[in-house]
Structure formats: C-alpha cells, structure tokens
Image (cartoon, rainbow, N blue to C red; front, side, top):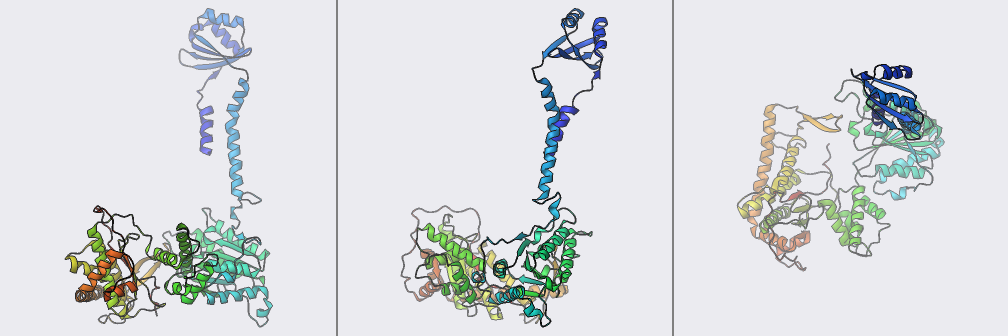
Length: 625
C-alpha cells in the first residue's frame, strides 16, 4: 500500500511538465504585440478568473493567471491566436485541494496503521520485543491428572513439582532446593503437552505457556528481549510455572549451521541460559519444557541447575493403553460387545494421540452408519484405518492384478504362519489401502522392546514371501515387492551394522552418525571403517537376504496347496484375520458369505502401483545397549 501511495503522488505531482510562470501583464502585451509567437492556448475559466496555458512555436510552455473579461476575449479573437476555452465547474478549487493532499493523508494513515500493528496490543510502539507467553485464565477448561493416563511414572514426577509449589518449606527445611527446570522427553503424541496442561490445572498457580518458535523473529535481539520479559513476568507472578513447548526450536546445539557469523537463535539461547541461572530457588519459578528431539539440545541447557529433572514420556504399555482408551471413551456411548482390554492388546506401539484418533474414527464410522452406539466392529475398522490407511474400493483393478495381489499377500501370510519367531498374522487383505493394492498386517501378542536374531531373520523371510509366491505361481516377478525388499534390506543391514548379529563380522558396530542439528535430523553417517570392511558388510547383507529368500522359497514350495487355498479365500472374501487363515489351512469353511463379485469386468489399469506393502506392526526400535 505504501508503494501504491507513492505511485499516486508521483503520477499527480511528478508527471506535470515544467512550465514558465508568466506575469499576466506580460501575457496581455504578447497577445497585443506578437500573437504569432503563440502556437496554442488553453483557457481554463472559473468564475471571473482564468488560467492561461500556452505553447510557443519553439515548444516552450508557459502559464499565466488573471482576470478575464470581454475585452481580453476580443483581443484574442482579433489576434488570430488558436485557443480553446474550458469552463471549470463550481468547487474546482476544492477538487484541486483534494487531489493534491489526499495522497499525503493516505500516507500518514498508513504510517499510523503500521505503528499500531507493531504495538501488538501493547501500551507503546515497537512492543514486539515483549514476550508472547499466554497466561492460563481461571475461566478456561481445566485439565487434571484424571485426564492423564498411561504415563504413571511421569505423572508421579510432576506431582512432586506441584507439591514443591504448594509447600516449598517442606522440602527446603532439610537443605534441598526446588528444581529450576523440568524437561519432558518422548516421541510425538505421547502426552507431554497434555501433562503440562494437567500441571497447570492442578497446581493452582499462574501458568505461562509459549512455543519455542515464538522467541525468534526477523529482527536481531527480539528473541533475547522476549526471554527477559518472559522471566520478568514469571518473577512478578511467583510462584508460577513457565512452559515452553518444542524447546528444540530455540535450544539447539550452538556452533552448528551453514553460516559462520553470529546467529540470532544462539543469542536467544544464551539469554535463556542466563535467565535459568539468574533466579534463586525461593523465587518459586519453575520452567517446564517439552521436546521430542533431546539429542539436538545444547549440553549447557541440559546440565543440572537448569534442567534438574528429565522426565521420559514413553509410548504406553498395554495397561497404559487400556487406561487411555477409558479416558477417551468417557463421552462416547459404547455397545456391550466392546472390550477395551482386547483393543489395548491389539494396538501395541500406539501413542496416546494414536488411540485418541482411533476412538474418534470409530465414532465417525458409527455416526456415518446412523448407529446409536459405537460397536467393537467400528473400533476394529478404525484400527485398520489408522494402521493401514483408508480403503480405496473405488480403484479399478483387473482380475489378473487382483490374483497377483492375492497370491502375493498369501505368500506373506503363509511364511508368517510357518516360521516360529515372528509376530502372529493379524489381518490379510487385498482391498487397496493407501498406496498399496494389498496388505499383510502382523501384531505382537504383547509389548516387545527387544528383537532376537531369530525374530529378525524370520521377519526377513516373511517379507520375501510375497515375491517368492509370485515367482512360483506365475513364473515372473513384479514391482509389487519393492516395499518388501526395502524392509528386508534395512533389517539385514541393521543386523550387521548396529546389532552385531553377523557371524563373520562379529559383535561390532559400524558407522558413526553425525548429527547435523541445523537440519534437525540425521544428515550424514560418517564411515569409521575401511573399504574392505564396507565390501564385507555388503556381502553379509546380501547373504542374509538371499538365505532367507531361499528359505521362504522352500517354505512356499512345500505348502503350495495351502498357498492356493489361502489366495482363493482372499479372492472370495477380500479380508482374512488370523482365525480365518487357520480355518483355511485346515480346509474348513469360514461361516460367512463371500464378497459379491462385480457384474462387469474391470478395465486394465495402466498405472504401475505397489502390489502390496508389508507392515510388521507398529513396534519401537530395539533398544540399544
């Protein structure tokens, strides 16, 4: 808008051509004596006054103003000057004033508007250096520890923080001090922010919340100024709690980055470090921060005296998942067949946010079907949607593509049933979900934190089962196994390089990950081994994958009849669970009607897609010793 205003002023004032101001008497004399020198004349009349705009033969322009009467018009007529008369309407003077001053008024108004925006609701200009922390009001909906489930250990830790705030002398009388900072760490969706909101609801003290990204702006020094203002507000309202969400946005390791100069983010972090050390224990100001990237935080921020306590907020176990489901289903009417304990056992690796999404999806599915209550089937369908993606029943698939997909998924399921150390087959489907044309889902019977070598090699064999089935039945391979090959190769490389499960290379760890914190993720993995070792690593990975490919080929070859029965059942019913697969292997009927076939053949799709994706379930990475 400023550019537009300047353009208007330039158009109105700057584009007027230069004109010589001539006295009115001189103009009259020129008309009487040398009228031939005037090439053209324009007379702008307003009441009894006129403005004469003329052009001489040499191109010089002039302007003159004065009183006009009948005598002057007669002189112009007799002189033979080529002129025209334009009579201005009444109010021409005010029009000229408006045209001249309106752009300036617009400029002043825009400037005042800009300054008002900079105040951001503050009492003075340039108040963007003030903290943007929000104070939780008394009227807002309070969240208590009754709304938090599945993270009992973390909840016990923060309950002690509340006791500090309510009765600090109870802990300081023996020489202890109140922790200055509490850092909550854990994967996304595990309830770190929810736990902080529960602290605010239970503590009964002022609670300031701010995001780590709210500190740094485009202006140098704003971040440090906001940190100072935040802690000043905290001291005025002590005892209180300051909560910084996603602190990794401002607390990343210093000295990393693409530039070599001073970083505004580092200046903000330095001020935060100073403020955390700057107030005494009796101030009653406790800083709580949450992050899912503790590995990128600066060591000075993590030392005792700043963040004295580190609370791990992990994914919930089966007991925790059951408690979380009970919390999220309080306001959801459930039918009598719903068993939350069974649902909790069938959702290993789910975070609190995943479980909340599952309950919400189930409620939406039940409402879409005009049900009064959410049934167990709705929860199971919602779980499949969260795990495997939404169904794509509108996708047109040819009969051959469907048969290839059925045998591919049957190969996964067959090998998964025959090996011993892998997770049980939960569900097999040839209904397209997400990017895949079919899926085989495995879920563990209980939470698992470690993976044995036998389980790893069995998992690779299961991943190879789909490609093997295609090769044995159709005599050719397709692009549908691309995801399976990636899963198998990654698992084999981790066995060799990270878990020391190679008999040839021994219990060694290869590869040192260099954390590039300015990108926020693993950018590069430095090699701490020779080229010869790299060749041996590749050979071991190839050997492990090839051996389990041949192993899967042997299993499928020995049980071809079961493979065919399972594939035909998939073509007939489209989706099978673990119990259905057992009945198919025994040759017994499933006891439910098959899915009706389409009445007309479907067109051949020309776009290549993944025939299947292999999902071994949502499990955490095996913990490193």
